Image 1: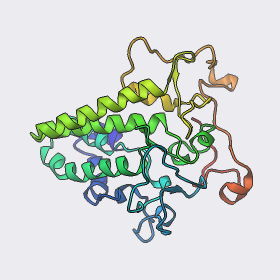
Image 2: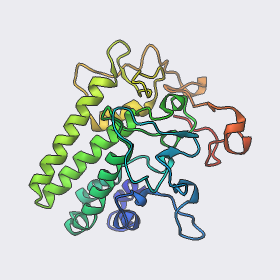
Image 3: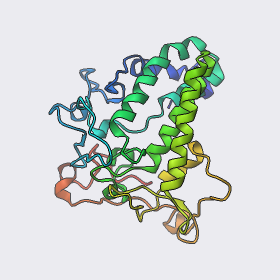
Image 4: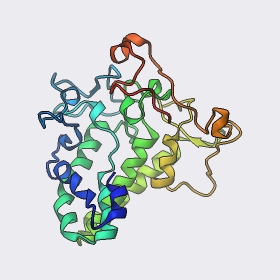
Amino acid sequence: MTMFCNYGQPYVPGICSLTTSTASSSTMARSVAKSDRATGKEFREWVNREGEGLHSRWSRFKVTYMGREPPQPPPHLTLDGLNHPILAWAEMESFRLTADRARLAMVYEPLVKYYRALQKYIRQGNGLYMTDWASMDNSPRNKYLASGGTAVDTSSQMVLFARNLAEIAEVLNKNKESTTFSTEASELARLINEKMWDPDRKFYFDLTLDGKRSPVKTIAAFWTLVAVWPARSRPLRCQPSCAIRKPSAGSTVFPPSRPTSPPSSRAEGTGKAPSGRPPTPW
């Protein structure tokens, strides 16, 4: 929403709504937990109150780390609360309009801690990044992410995160740190192109825990266009496997998701997403 507010600068300074999140960030990535409106406290379901290793509460799996040791100490949040790492993107888009260097200086350290915490807890041994249902509610992709599969959108967002931190560091004359983040972004982008690109299907796919590409095409792959910058030799193929019809024909490029688990494992058996929303069109 802060990016929509950018159109109203300086009358709608939406970036201020992120101040609490970024300023209170810690090495446990507490900043991204949802809050209870009534109490102002962190949303209870996202807190790792059991003190266990990383797990997804509503996807009901524990993360298995492949090719690396499980991080210690256990994370403060569950995997459900560690999705869409795009706060730095919002900050840079606001800065392009406001030139508010003082704000970048204020949020830089918390954003770096958040980035490093995500590297510590949701990076798999293959160098790519994990997610669960919270990235795309009720998507048919989700079962392939179980137990620690890696996601093309989250991995791409981490590329974007690193690039944004590099930009912020450059503005703040932290040139050595800027170079470090740029290098990390390029290496992660290389891994995404190497492991997630399917040359036959001409598309980027999530990876299962054992490293196999998911059979499901989703718009998660389009994050590569924002962050990874695929080579010209890798245009995403949306046809003929994805038919494009007029909305009146009841079909879109990517059809609406359907519940992917039996009612007993969904929120109150309602067929809705854990948040109570109906299945989301991705």
